Image 1: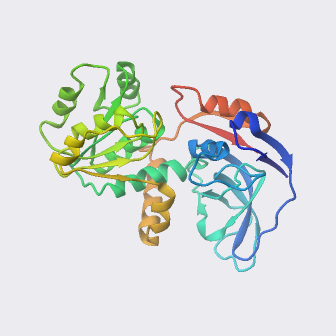
Image 2: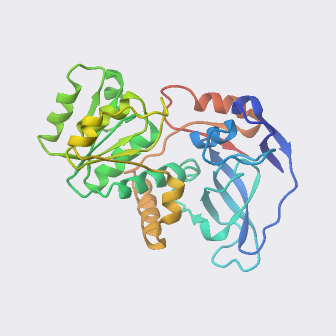
Image 3: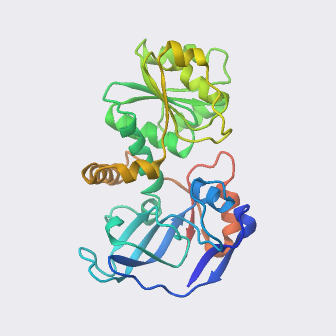
Length: 325
């Protein structure tokens, strides 16, 4: 089978190569999938660079999420059949023609959801809906996030609206406000405007902002914290611009603010099965009825992974880049 492998850590477009690997057989409790599509996530690229929380032994496989067809069942597997369409997330080595994964972690995909949406159903959408749970907000509450025009920002706005949670989005430039409005997402403020804090406050009508999500780092972290009310929570979700959060000690002290991190894989492992199942059910429902949209920027053959990575790194990209096998 073909698989994307790297023998050194580095820029993915430079170190990834397509190699022939033996076709693996599933062990007890495992399933072999014939991979159809797999998305490129930032954490996949960070792993290949050697800068993520998980650093594989070399030579290393790549990719973590995939849509596939059940191809073979290991001993003791029940509730699945060869030929079923399923998705897996958090299974290392997804960028290959075939993948071995635990049967218990697979999610069957309804026929109403197309392949391109199904292939990206777990990692980022599930992290986003888990983040919404993590914030412990209820209907009518206000939260604020930066990187509102990113994939997670757009999904958080859509899922928040579906639950009745008000989400203020911060973007760096005025053009981003119009881009999101065109996608049906309102309550967005551009921080390149001198009065952006006043504009954000006007959106809430004086209601407190109970939580904020920082996906950028640097001074953008402090911008989010500056809007949060007393006893509010700032959650570090990512660090697109800087690994250092620049926040005011005055805001932390006088607002009695809580600052904590969110790592989807850790949160998911600690989540009870009932909550996990309910969130996946909600995701599938939201995608199926169009409440949550999962756009695709492009689909590339695995042999063209260099072009796919460059496309994924394109500023302003809307939608995921997918690899096909």
